[in-house]
Amino acid sequence: MITAIRTASAADIISFYRWSQTSSYVFWDCGVRKAIGGLIEKEDRIWGYLDIRGKIDKSHGIYIVRMMKRVLRAANMAGHDVYIVCESEVYPSAPRLLKACGFVPTTETYNGSEVWKCQA
Image 1 (tube, rainbow, N blue to C red):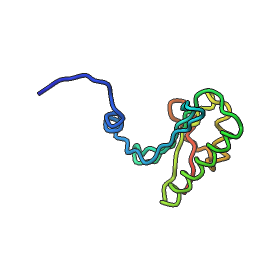
Image 2: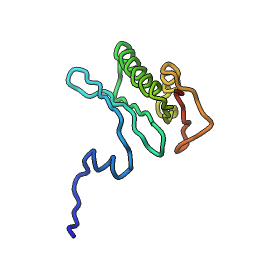
Image 3: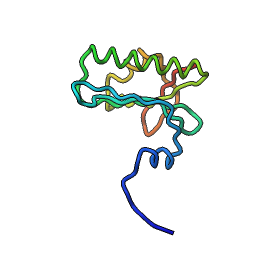
Image 4: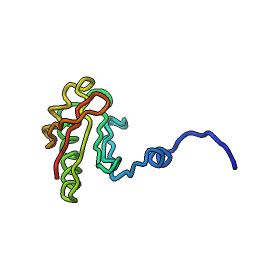
C-alpha cells in the first residue's frame, strides 16, 4: 500500500465530503473571478452556495441574481427544495438577496447562522 499526501483536487473534496456537485457557475469581470455559486447535494439535501469577492456593482448584482433564479427554478422544477446558510453577520445584505431569489428563513441554524429554504 502506498501512502501519499498531495494537493486535493476538486474530485477529492467532493468525494471526501460525499457531495454530489449538481451545478456551479463562476462570474468573471475583466479577467477576474468575482463570484462563484451553485448547488451541491449533501446530507440528502440540495444546498446552494454563493461566494463573492470584493465589490460587485449593481448591474453585475442583477446579472448574478438572474442566474441564481434560473438555477433555482431548474432545481425546483425537478422537485428539489434548495437550502442555503444565510451568513448575515458576515454579509449584511444576504437576507435581501435571498428574499429576492425566493428563499424564506427556516427555524434551523447551521454553525450559528440561519438556514433558508427555496421551496419546490
